[in-house]
Image (cartoon, rainbow, N blue to C red; front, side):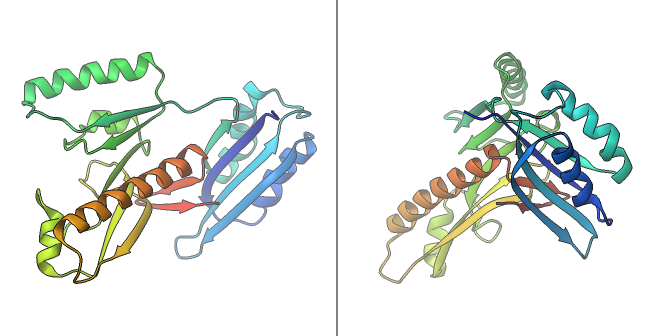
Length: 242
């Protein structure tokens, strides 16, 4: 299979950025196979995602990041990430906790978790009904690499039985949201969302079933976009470059 480089970047928008990045690749005999870019004209930020084949690329793979940082990132104040198709992301799933966790056991558990993540070279984490607050230390160790899924009733329908509350309110749609985890609870950059329609004929159990199915779909889409390197997070928003 052809080895591919994937570059994602954002920086203050200036003339010539697109031309310089593509020129860097083509001059070094890289074959560009994908390019997408977007400009936030309100904040004046340029976003870009580009892929190219490495078979005939003149810059050694291990030196591309240094070359790009020296030649362009400093010049344009770029924040960039470089990935290669032969490096597969390793995911850890943190499942729902069945028993209450005290502060002491939580700290000990997190220490073991971080040691295990480092040992297995985990690159991102998915929370599956984890129902625990992730510490600031863990979040800082995995910035924009911890993905959470929850029902979109938050904060309107908080608590242990949001679908029951939604049923009592007579909602017409229910939803799910997948987002990156930040230190602010359930307020990180949103990756994926979707909704399903509800009628008066639906029971509470119908809402629960539809909601859980939707959560699985939304989480799957978010993880897929993340591992395909299509998500650029900036401040508390995301740009999805497809």
